[in-house]
Length: 399
Ligand code: HEM
Image 1: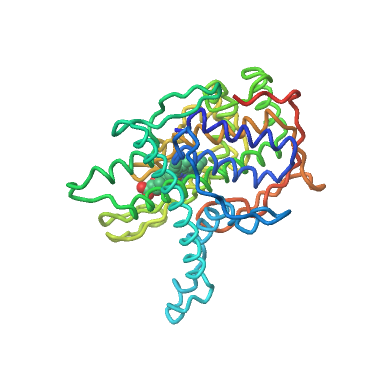
Image 2 (image 1 turned 90 degrees about the vertical axis):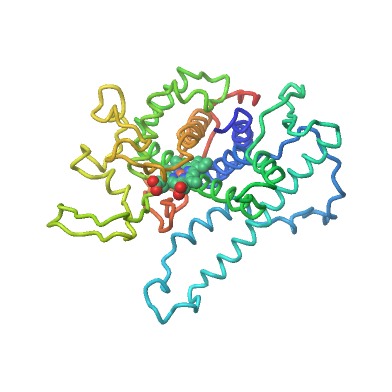
Protein backbone atom coordinates (compact mmCIF):
# COMPACT_ATOMS: atom_id res chain seq x y z
CA UNK A 1 0.00 0.00 0.00
CA UNK A 2 1.13 3.53 -0.61
CA UNK A 3 2.04 5.25 2.59
CA UNK A 4 1.02 8.69 3.79
CA UNK A 5 4.32 10.03 2.52
CA UNK A 6 3.74 8.48 -0.89
CA UNK A 7 0.61 10.56 -1.18
CA UNK A 8 2.53 13.69 -0.28
CA UNK A 9 4.22 13.67 -3.68
CA UNK A 10 0.93 13.82 -5.62
CA UNK A 11 -0.11 16.60 -3.26
CA UNK A 12 3.06 18.53 -4.14
CA UNK A 13 2.40 17.97 -7.83
CA UNK A 14 -1.10 19.27 -7.30
CA UNK A 15 0.19 22.42 -5.72
CA UNK A 16 2.53 22.96 -8.67
CA UNK A 17 -0.42 22.58 -10.98
CA UNK A 18 -2.05 25.65 -9.51
CA UNK A 19 0.82 27.65 -10.94
CA UNK A 20 1.46 25.67 -14.11
CA UNK A 21 -1.50 24.09 -15.95
CA UNK A 22 -0.76 20.86 -17.87
CA UNK A 23 -2.88 18.26 -19.61
CA UNK A 24 -4.80 15.90 -17.37
CA UNK A 25 -3.20 12.93 -19.19
CA UNK A 26 0.27 14.02 -18.31
CA UNK A 27 -0.78 14.69 -14.76
CA UNK A 28 -2.51 11.31 -14.41
CA UNK A 29 0.57 9.50 -15.67
CA UNK A 30 2.91 11.50 -13.47
CA UNK A 31 0.75 11.07 -10.36
CA UNK A 32 0.26 7.35 -10.85
CA UNK A 33 3.94 6.77 -11.56
CA UNK A 34 4.87 8.84 -8.50
CA UNK A 35 2.53 6.85 -6.22
CA UNK A 36 3.75 3.52 -7.61
CA UNK A 37 7.45 4.28 -7.64
CA UNK A 38 7.33 5.64 -4.12
CA UNK A 39 5.16 2.79 -2.85
CA UNK A 40 7.43 0.15 -4.37
CA UNK A 41 10.91 1.60 -4.23
CA UNK A 42 11.66 4.52 -1.99
CA UNK A 43 15.25 5.64 -1.87
CA UNK A 44 15.25 5.45 1.89
CA UNK A 45 17.80 7.12 4.14
CA UNK A 46 16.56 10.48 5.39
CA UNK A 47 19.99 12.06 5.76
CA UNK A 48 21.45 13.52 2.61
CA UNK A 49 24.52 11.44 1.69
CA UNK A 50 27.66 13.23 0.58
CA UNK A 51 27.26 12.98 -3.16
CA UNK A 52 30.04 13.10 -5.73
CA UNK A 53 30.20 16.36 -7.72
CA UNK A 54 27.50 16.47 -10.41
CA UNK A 55 28.31 16.88 -14.12
CA UNK A 56 28.78 20.49 -15.23
CA UNK A 57 25.68 22.22 -16.49
CA UNK A 58 25.60 24.63 -19.42
CA UNK A 59 24.49 28.27 -19.01
CA UNK A 60 20.73 28.74 -19.51
CA UNK A 61 19.94 25.06 -20.27
CA UNK A 62 21.65 23.81 -17.10
CA UNK A 63 21.55 20.00 -17.12
CA UNK A 64 18.85 19.75 -19.80
CA UNK A 65 21.17 17.89 -22.16
CA UNK A 66 21.36 15.08 -19.60
CA UNK A 67 17.61 14.69 -19.18
CA UNK A 68 16.34 11.29 -20.31
CA UNK A 69 12.79 10.49 -21.38
CA UNK A 70 10.52 10.83 -18.33
CA UNK A 71 10.04 7.60 -16.39
CA UNK A 72 6.30 7.38 -17.10
CA UNK A 73 7.08 7.58 -20.85
CA UNK A 74 9.20 4.43 -20.58
CA UNK A 75 6.37 2.57 -18.82
CA UNK A 76 3.93 3.76 -21.44
CA UNK A 77 6.22 2.65 -24.28
CA UNK A 78 6.51 -0.79 -22.72
CA UNK A 79 2.73 -1.23 -22.41
CA UNK A 80 2.34 -0.12 -26.02
CA UNK A 81 4.96 -2.59 -27.23
CA UNK A 82 3.59 -5.58 -25.34
CA UNK A 83 0.15 -5.12 -26.83
CA UNK A 84 1.27 -4.10 -30.34
CA UNK A 85 0.06 -5.94 -33.42
CA UNK A 86 3.07 -7.83 -34.76
CA UNK A 87 2.84 -9.02 -38.33
CA UNK A 88 5.51 -11.67 -37.55
CA UNK A 89 2.97 -13.48 -35.33
CA UNK A 90 0.69 -14.05 -38.32
CA UNK A 91 2.82 -14.32 -41.49
CA UNK A 92 5.56 -16.90 -41.16
CA UNK A 93 7.82 -15.48 -43.92
CA UNK A 94 8.01 -12.15 -42.05
CA UNK A 95 9.54 -13.79 -38.97
CA UNK A 96 12.91 -12.49 -37.90
CA UNK A 97 12.83 -9.39 -40.14
CA UNK A 98 11.58 -6.95 -37.48
CA UNK A 99 9.62 -5.14 -40.20
CA UNK A 100 7.84 -2.82 -37.75
CA UNK A 101 10.96 -2.11 -35.70
CA UNK A 102 9.31 -3.62 -32.60
CA UNK A 103 12.39 -5.58 -31.56
CA UNK A 104 14.58 -2.49 -31.90
CA UNK A 105 12.11 -0.47 -29.79
CA UNK A 106 11.92 -3.27 -27.21
CA UNK A 107 15.72 -3.27 -26.91
CA UNK A 108 15.64 0.50 -26.38
CA UNK A 109 12.96 0.23 -23.66
CA UNK A 110 14.97 -2.56 -22.00
CA UNK A 111 18.10 -0.37 -21.98
CA UNK A 112 16.19 2.56 -20.45
CA UNK A 113 14.62 0.38 -17.77
CA UNK A 114 17.91 -1.26 -16.91
CA UNK A 115 19.61 2.13 -16.48
CA UNK A 116 16.73 3.35 -14.28
CA UNK A 117 16.80 0.28 -12.05
CA UNK A 118 20.57 0.25 -11.77
CA UNK A 119 20.38 3.87 -10.60
CA UNK A 120 17.71 3.04 -7.98
CA UNK A 121 19.64 0.06 -6.68
CA UNK A 122 22.86 2.07 -6.56
CA UNK A 123 21.17 4.84 -4.53
CA UNK A 124 19.73 2.24 -2.18
CA UNK A 125 23.09 0.48 -1.79
CA UNK A 126 24.79 3.79 -1.03
CA UNK A 127 22.18 4.58 1.63
CA UNK A 128 22.57 1.11 3.16
CA UNK A 129 26.36 1.41 3.13
CA UNK A 130 26.16 4.85 4.77
CA UNK A 131 23.87 3.41 7.46
CA UNK A 132 26.30 0.62 8.17
CA UNK A 133 29.17 3.12 8.38
CA UNK A 134 27.19 5.14 10.92
CA UNK A 135 27.16 2.02 13.04
CA UNK A 136 23.62 0.86 12.36
CA UNK A 137 23.06 -2.71 13.37
CA UNK A 138 22.62 -5.28 10.62
CA UNK A 139 18.99 -5.22 9.49
CA UNK A 140 18.36 -1.79 10.99
CA UNK A 141 15.45 -0.07 9.32
CA UNK A 142 16.08 3.11 7.33
CA UNK A 143 15.76 6.49 8.97
CA UNK A 144 13.28 8.96 7.67
CA UNK A 145 12.60 12.65 8.20
CA UNK A 146 9.09 13.60 9.19
CA UNK A 147 7.42 16.85 8.18
CA UNK A 148 8.45 18.36 11.50
CA UNK A 149 12.08 17.48 10.97
CA UNK A 150 12.35 14.74 13.61
CA UNK A 151 14.21 11.63 12.56
CA UNK A 152 12.23 8.44 13.09
CA UNK A 153 12.54 4.77 12.19
CA UNK A 154 10.37 3.59 9.32
CA UNK A 155 9.64 0.16 7.92
CA UNK A 156 11.79 -1.26 5.14
CA UNK A 157 10.67 -0.80 1.58
CA UNK A 158 10.46 -3.47 -1.09
CA UNK A 159 13.96 -2.90 -2.41
CA UNK A 160 15.45 -3.06 1.11
CA UNK A 161 13.82 -6.43 1.67
CA UNK A 162 15.00 -7.80 -1.66
CA UNK A 163 18.57 -6.55 -1.10
CA UNK A 164 18.56 -8.09 2.40
CA UNK A 165 17.61 -11.40 0.79
CA UNK A 166 20.29 -11.01 -1.86
CA UNK A 167 22.92 -10.60 0.88
CA UNK A 168 21.56 -13.30 3.22
CA UNK A 169 20.57 -16.06 0.83
CA UNK A 170 23.99 -17.55 0.10
CA UNK A 171 22.73 -21.02 1.08
CA UNK A 172 19.31 -20.78 -0.58
CA UNK A 173 18.39 -23.41 -3.15
CA UNK A 174 16.99 -20.83 -5.60
CA UNK A 175 19.28 -17.84 -5.43
CA UNK A 176 17.96 -14.32 -5.73
CA UNK A 177 20.13 -12.35 -8.15
CA UNK A 178 20.41 -8.69 -9.04
CA UNK A 179 18.84 -9.51 -12.41
CA UNK A 180 15.85 -11.20 -10.72
CA UNK A 181 15.39 -8.21 -8.42
CA UNK A 182 15.30 -5.89 -11.43
CA UNK A 183 12.83 -8.15 -13.25
CA UNK A 184 10.57 -8.32 -10.19
CA UNK A 185 10.57 -4.56 -9.60
CA UNK A 186 9.87 -3.91 -13.29
CA UNK A 187 7.03 -6.44 -13.26
CA UNK A 188 5.30 -4.83 -10.31
CA UNK A 189 5.89 -1.21 -11.25
CA UNK A 190 5.04 -1.55 -14.95
CA UNK A 191 1.91 -3.57 -14.22
CA UNK A 192 0.78 -0.88 -11.82
CA UNK A 193 1.74 2.47 -13.31
CA UNK A 194 0.13 2.67 -16.74
CA UNK A 195 -3.00 0.87 -15.53
CA UNK A 196 -3.47 3.29 -12.63
CA UNK A 197 -2.72 6.33 -14.81
CA UNK A 198 -5.23 5.13 -17.41
CA UNK A 199 -7.89 4.66 -14.72
CA UNK A 200 -7.36 8.20 -13.36
CA UNK A 201 -7.81 9.58 -16.87
CA UNK A 202 -10.88 7.47 -17.67
CA UNK A 203 -12.54 8.34 -14.38
CA UNK A 204 -11.96 12.06 -14.80
CA UNK A 205 -13.20 11.88 -18.40
CA UNK A 206 -16.36 10.00 -17.34
CA UNK A 207 -17.03 12.55 -14.60
CA UNK A 208 -16.55 15.42 -17.05
CA UNK A 209 -19.04 13.79 -19.43
CA UNK A 210 -21.50 13.33 -16.54
CA UNK A 211 -21.56 16.67 -14.71
CA UNK A 212 -24.24 15.51 -12.29
CA UNK A 213 -21.96 12.65 -11.12
CA UNK A 214 -19.04 15.08 -10.89
CA UNK A 215 -21.18 17.38 -8.75
CA UNK A 216 -22.08 14.50 -6.40
CA UNK A 217 -18.45 13.37 -6.08
CA UNK A 218 -17.36 16.92 -5.26
CA UNK A 219 -20.22 17.57 -2.83
CA UNK A 220 -19.36 14.36 -0.96
CA UNK A 221 -15.67 15.32 -0.73
CA UNK A 222 -16.53 18.85 0.44
CA UNK A 223 -18.86 17.45 3.11
CA UNK A 224 -16.54 14.70 4.37
CA UNK A 225 -13.04 16.13 3.86
CA UNK A 226 -13.77 19.86 3.80
CA UNK A 227 -11.65 22.48 2.07
CA UNK A 228 -8.81 22.88 4.53
CA UNK A 229 -6.83 19.79 3.60
CA UNK A 230 -6.33 17.71 0.48
CA UNK A 231 -8.30 14.45 0.20
CA UNK A 232 -6.09 11.36 0.42
CA UNK A 233 -6.15 7.58 0.60
CA UNK A 234 -7.38 7.63 4.18
CA UNK A 235 -10.61 9.33 3.05
CA UNK A 236 -11.61 6.83 0.35
CA UNK A 237 -13.46 4.53 2.78
CA UNK A 238 -15.70 7.43 3.86
CA UNK A 239 -16.59 8.47 0.30
CA UNK A 240 -19.13 5.88 -1.00
CA UNK A 241 -20.17 7.85 -4.07
CA UNK A 242 -16.53 8.32 -5.12
CA UNK A 243 -16.04 4.55 -4.73
CA UNK A 244 -19.18 3.84 -6.76
CA UNK A 245 -17.98 6.16 -9.55
CA UNK A 246 -14.63 4.35 -9.54
CA UNK A 247 -16.29 0.92 -9.67
CA UNK A 248 -18.40 2.09 -12.59
CA UNK A 249 -15.28 3.36 -14.39
CA UNK A 250 -13.56 0.00 -13.76
CA UNK A 251 -16.60 -1.71 -15.28
CA UNK A 252 -16.80 0.39 -18.44
CA UNK A 253 -13.10 1.18 -18.91
CA UNK A 254 -11.04 -1.64 -17.37
CA UNK A 255 -7.40 -0.69 -17.88
CA UNK A 256 -6.41 -4.35 -18.38
CA UNK A 257 -9.27 -5.68 -20.53
CA UNK A 258 -7.98 -9.21 -21.13
CA UNK A 259 -6.92 -11.97 -18.72
CA UNK A 260 -4.77 -14.74 -20.15
CA UNK A 261 -4.80 -18.40 -19.08
CA UNK A 262 -3.98 -21.83 -20.48
CA UNK A 263 -6.60 -24.59 -20.29
CA UNK A 264 -5.30 -27.27 -17.94
CA UNK A 265 -7.57 -29.96 -19.40
CA UNK A 266 -10.00 -30.42 -22.27
CA UNK A 267 -13.22 -28.47 -21.79
CA UNK A 268 -16.55 -28.86 -23.50
CA UNK A 269 -18.53 -25.61 -23.67
CA UNK A 270 -22.23 -26.05 -24.22
CA UNK A 271 -22.97 -22.42 -25.13
CA UNK A 272 -23.10 -21.11 -28.72
CA UNK A 273 -23.88 -24.51 -30.25
CA UNK A 274 -21.20 -26.30 -28.19
CA UNK A 275 -17.47 -26.60 -28.86
CA UNK A 276 -14.38 -28.20 -27.38
CA UNK A 277 -11.33 -26.39 -26.03
CA UNK A 278 -8.36 -28.81 -26.07
CA UNK A 279 -5.96 -29.00 -23.11
CA UNK A 280 -3.06 -26.55 -23.34
CA UNK A 281 -4.99 -23.97 -25.37
CA UNK A 282 -4.20 -20.30 -24.78
CA UNK A 283 -7.43 -18.76 -23.49
CA UNK A 284 -8.09 -15.03 -23.56
CA UNK A 285 -10.86 -13.91 -21.22
CA UNK A 286 -12.49 -10.70 -22.36
CA UNK A 287 -13.08 -8.89 -19.07
CA UNK A 288 -14.18 -5.78 -20.97
CA UNK A 289 -17.11 -7.44 -22.73
CA UNK A 290 -18.16 -9.51 -19.69
CA UNK A 291 -18.70 -6.22 -17.82
CA UNK A 292 -20.92 -4.91 -20.64
CA UNK A 293 -23.05 -8.02 -21.11
CA UNK A 294 -26.75 -7.01 -21.10
CA UNK A 295 -27.52 -10.40 -19.52
CA UNK A 296 -25.81 -9.15 -16.35
CA UNK A 297 -26.15 -5.39 -16.42
CA UNK A 298 -29.02 -2.91 -16.81
CA UNK A 299 -28.23 -0.25 -19.42
CA UNK A 300 -24.71 -1.70 -19.69
CA UNK A 301 -23.24 1.08 -21.84
CA UNK A 302 -24.35 3.89 -19.55
CA UNK A 303 -22.18 5.40 -16.82
CA UNK A 304 -24.34 5.02 -13.70
CA UNK A 305 -22.39 4.94 -10.41
CA UNK A 306 -25.75 4.66 -8.61
CA UNK A 307 -25.93 0.97 -9.57
CA UNK A 308 -23.15 0.33 -7.00
CA UNK A 309 -24.69 2.51 -4.26
CA UNK A 310 -26.84 1.25 -1.37
CA UNK A 311 -30.16 0.10 -2.85
CA UNK A 312 -28.69 -0.12 -6.38
CA UNK A 313 -28.98 -3.39 -8.30
CA UNK A 314 -25.22 -4.07 -8.16
CA UNK A 315 -24.62 -2.82 -4.63
CA UNK A 316 -23.17 -6.17 -3.52
CA UNK A 317 -20.74 -6.57 -6.43
CA UNK A 318 -17.10 -6.36 -5.50
CA UNK A 319 -14.28 -5.83 -8.02
CA UNK A 320 -11.86 -8.22 -6.25
CA UNK A 321 -12.51 -11.29 -8.38
CA UNK A 322 -15.37 -13.01 -6.56
CA UNK A 323 -18.16 -12.04 -8.96
CA UNK A 324 -17.59 -13.38 -12.45
CA UNK A 325 -19.72 -10.78 -14.24
CA UNK A 326 -17.33 -8.08 -12.97
CA UNK A 327 -13.59 -8.87 -13.00
CA UNK A 328 -11.60 -5.65 -13.57
CA UNK A 329 -8.67 -7.14 -11.64
CA UNK A 330 -9.02 -10.70 -12.95
CA UNK A 331 -9.50 -13.55 -10.50
CA UNK A 332 -7.82 -16.43 -8.71
CA UNK A 333 -4.16 -16.77 -7.89
CA UNK A 334 -3.08 -14.98 -11.08
CA UNK A 335 -5.46 -12.13 -10.28
CA UNK A 336 -3.99 -8.65 -9.93
CA UNK A 337 -1.77 -8.54 -6.81
CA UNK A 338 -1.90 -4.72 -6.87
CA UNK A 339 -5.67 -4.40 -6.56
CA UNK A 340 -5.52 -3.30 -2.92
CA UNK A 341 -3.24 -0.42 -3.86
CA UNK A 342 -5.22 0.41 -7.02
CA UNK A 343 -8.50 0.50 -5.09
CA UNK A 344 -7.02 3.13 -2.78
CA UNK A 345 -4.63 5.18 -4.90
CA UNK A 346 -6.72 5.83 -8.03
CA UNK A 347 -9.83 7.19 -6.26
CA UNK A 348 -7.58 9.19 -3.89
CA UNK A 349 -5.85 10.90 -6.83
CA UNK A 350 -9.17 11.60 -8.56
CA UNK A 351 -10.64 12.90 -5.29
CA UNK A 352 -7.77 15.36 -4.91
CA UNK A 353 -8.05 16.51 -8.54
CA UNK A 354 -11.80 17.06 -8.23
CA UNK A 355 -11.52 18.72 -4.85
CA UNK A 356 -8.70 21.11 -5.76
CA UNK A 357 -9.67 22.18 -9.26
CA UNK A 358 -12.52 23.15 -11.52
CA UNK A 359 -11.89 21.50 -14.87
CA UNK A 360 -12.86 22.81 -18.28
CA UNK A 361 -12.69 20.94 -21.57
CA UNK A 362 -10.00 22.29 -23.87
CA UNK A 363 -11.68 23.24 -27.15
CA UNK A 364 -15.39 23.44 -27.92
CA UNK A 365 -16.40 19.77 -27.99
CA UNK A 366 -19.49 19.22 -25.84
CA UNK A 367 -18.45 15.72 -24.78
CA UNK A 368 -15.02 14.26 -24.31
CA UNK A 369 -14.35 11.49 -26.84
CA UNK A 370 -13.94 8.08 -25.22
CA UNK A 371 -12.05 6.28 -27.98
CA UNK A 372 -9.73 3.52 -26.76
CA UNK A 373 -6.15 3.01 -27.91
CA UNK A 374 -4.68 -0.35 -28.96
CA UNK A 375 -2.21 -1.96 -26.61
CA UNK A 376 -1.96 -4.13 -23.56
CA UNK A 377 -3.37 -1.38 -21.35
CA UNK A 378 -6.71 -0.01 -22.48
CA UNK A 379 -5.83 3.68 -22.35
CA UNK A 380 -7.42 6.68 -24.04
CA UNK A 381 -6.63 7.01 -27.73
CA UNK A 382 -6.42 10.80 -27.45
CA UNK A 383 -4.91 12.54 -24.44
CA UNK A 384 -7.40 14.09 -22.06
CA UNK A 385 -6.98 17.84 -22.43
CA UNK A 386 -8.54 19.80 -19.59
CA UNK A 387 -7.87 23.23 -18.13
CA UNK A 388 -7.68 23.33 -14.35
CA UNK A 389 -8.48 26.38 -12.28
CA UNK A 390 -7.87 26.26 -8.53
CA UNK A 391 -11.05 26.14 -6.43
CA UNK A 392 -9.44 26.10 -2.97
CA UNK A 393 -8.10 29.39 -1.78
CA UNK A 394 -5.81 29.45 0.10
CA UNK A 395 -4.45 26.15 -1.21
CA UNK A 396 -4.20 23.75 1.76
CA UNK A 397 -0.75 23.20 3.23
CA UNK A 398 0.88 19.93 2.22
CA UNK A 399 1.91 18.10 5.38
C1 HEM B 1 -6.66 0.17 -11.59
C2 HEM B 1 -5.48 -0.35 -11.80
C3 HEM B 1 -5.25 -1.80 -12.17
C4 HEM B 1 -6.01 -2.65 -12.93
C5 HEM B 1 -7.35 -2.34 -13.61
C6 HEM B 1 -5.31 -3.93 -12.97
C7 HEM B 1 -5.78 -5.07 -13.60
C8 HEM B 1 -5.09 -6.25 -13.71
C9 HEM B 1 -5.57 -7.43 -14.39
C10 HEM B 1 -6.94 -7.59 -15.05
C11 HEM B 1 -4.60 -8.37 -14.30
C12 HEM B 1 -4.68 -9.80 -14.85
C13 HEM B 1 -5.34 -10.66 -13.79
C14 HEM B 1 -5.68 -12.06 -14.21
O1 HEM B 1 -5.11 -12.56 -15.20
O2 HEM B 1 -6.53 -12.68 -13.54
C15 HEM B 1 -3.48 -7.79 -13.58
C16 HEM B 1 -2.29 -8.43 -13.32
C17 HEM B 1 -1.26 -7.87 -12.60
N1 HEM B 1 -1.27 -6.67 -11.93
FE1 HEM B 1 -2.75 -5.30 -12.01
N2 HEM B 1 -4.15 -3.83 -12.24
C18 HEM B 1 -4.08 -2.55 -11.73
C19 HEM B 1 -3.10 -2.05 -10.89
C20 HEM B 1 -2.00 -2.76 -10.47
C21 HEM B 1 -1.03 -2.26 -9.51
C22 HEM B 1 -1.14 -0.92 -8.77
C23 HEM B 1 -0.06 -3.22 -9.42
C24 HEM B 1 1.20 -3.26 -8.57
C25 HEM B 1 1.48 -2.45 -7.61
C26 HEM B 1 -0.42 -4.32 -10.31
C27 HEM B 1 0.33 -5.46 -10.50
C28 HEM B 1 -0.05 -6.52 -11.30
C29 HEM B 1 0.79 -7.68 -11.59
C30 HEM B 1 2.23 -7.89 -11.08
C31 HEM B 1 0.04 -8.53 -12.39
C32 HEM B 1 0.46 -9.87 -12.98
C33 HEM B 1 0.05 -10.96 -12.01
C34 HEM B 1 0.40 -12.35 -12.55
O3 HEM B 1 0.47 -12.55 -13.76
O4 HEM B 1 0.56 -13.25 -11.73
N3 HEM B 1 -1.61 -3.99 -10.92
N4 HEM B 1 -3.81 -6.49 -13.22
